[in-house]
Length: 226
Image (cartoon, rainbow, N blue to C red; front, side):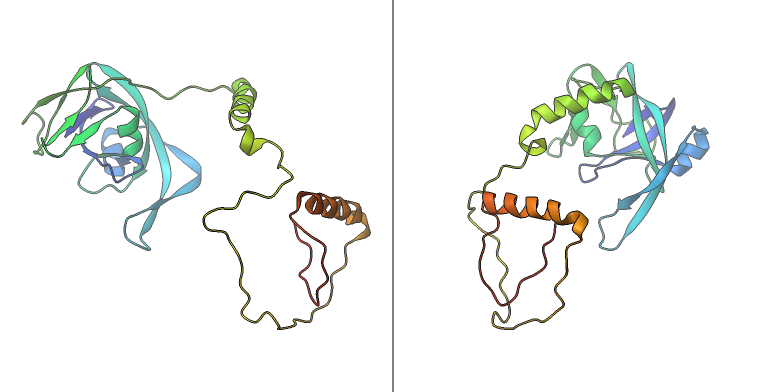
C-alpha cells in the first residue's frame, strides 16, 4: 500500500509481526530527509536466530492519514523492497486492523484511501477509516517530577517499601536441589569489614524478622550477600 510520507508516496508494509517503525535508508537519501544520530546504537533483532542489525540513525517525518498529517518517529534501517515498515506500535496507536479474510485494512473515521497489490499508486483504491488518532506527547523537563510521582502512586506495590514477610506460595515454587547434599566444600571464610558491620547486623535482623532467614546450625554455609 502507498501512503504519503514527508510529501512523497511511499510503499508501506503494515507488519503485525514487527515491533518497530522503520524507514528505508535509500528512501531517506532519495528524499534528502534530515536525520539525527543516536548516542547509543540500538540492536535490531531479526526473526532468524543469530541474525541482527543495528539502528544508528532516526528521523521524524510527517505521515498523511486522510487530510491530516501526524509526526512519526522512524528508525532508519536497510529495509528491502519496501520504503516503510509500520509495526505493531503504529497499528495499535492508530487502531488499525488487518482483515485477511476480506483482504483489506479496517480503520474508522475519517476516510483514508489505501492502495494495494501494485508497485504503482492508484490501483485497487479502498476507502478505510481511522479514529482515536494520537500524536506523541511533548514532555518538558519540568513535567518529569509530576509524572514520576504519578507513576509511583499508581504502582505503589512496586515502588513502595518491601513488605517484611514471605511471599505467598505459588502453584510452582522455586527450589535448588543439590547434586550431593553430603558433600563438604572447604573454603576460607570471608570477613566483613568493620565499616560495614553495622549494615550487616541491620540486614540480618531485618531478614530474620521477615522470616527470609532463620538461625540454624550447619557444617557449611555460603557467605552473606546482598
